[in-house]
Length: 160
Image (cartoon, rainbow, N blue to C red):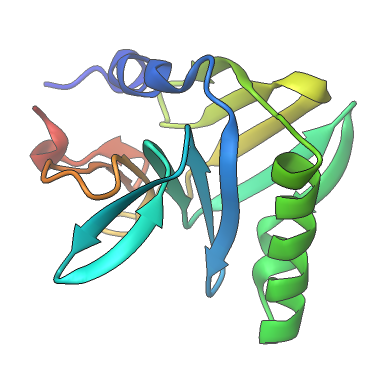
C-alpha cells in the first residue's frame, strides 16, 4: 500500500531549487513547468518543455504574501478569460522571475503546498472524487509513468 504523503514528498522533492519555466493552461487545467526548457520529440512532433511538469485539474490557488493571485475559477469560462489568466501568471512568475521552488509539503489527502521565492505559494486541493484525476507530475518527453493522483489517492500504476 502506498503512503500518499510520503510518496508525494518523495516525487515532488525533485522540484526544490528549480525555477518555474512556463505557466499555461489546457481548458481549466493549470500547467506549470519547472527547470530549463529543452527540446524533445513526442509522437513525431518537436516540442519544448521543462524538466518537470505539474498538471492540476482539481481546486488550486496561487497566493503571494497571503493574498490570492489566481484560482481554478480564473481558468473557467470563456477562452479569453483563461488565456488572460494564464498569460498574467506566466508574466508574474516566469518573465518577471526567477521564481524558484523553495519547499514542497503534502498531506494524506494528496493535497500539496509548493512554496516559491518572492512569497508565492501554490495550494493544490484534490476533489476526492473517485476515478477523477486531481493532478499529475511527470518529466515531459521522457518515456516513464506519470505520477497521478485520482480521487485524492495515488494511482497504483504510478508506482515505479
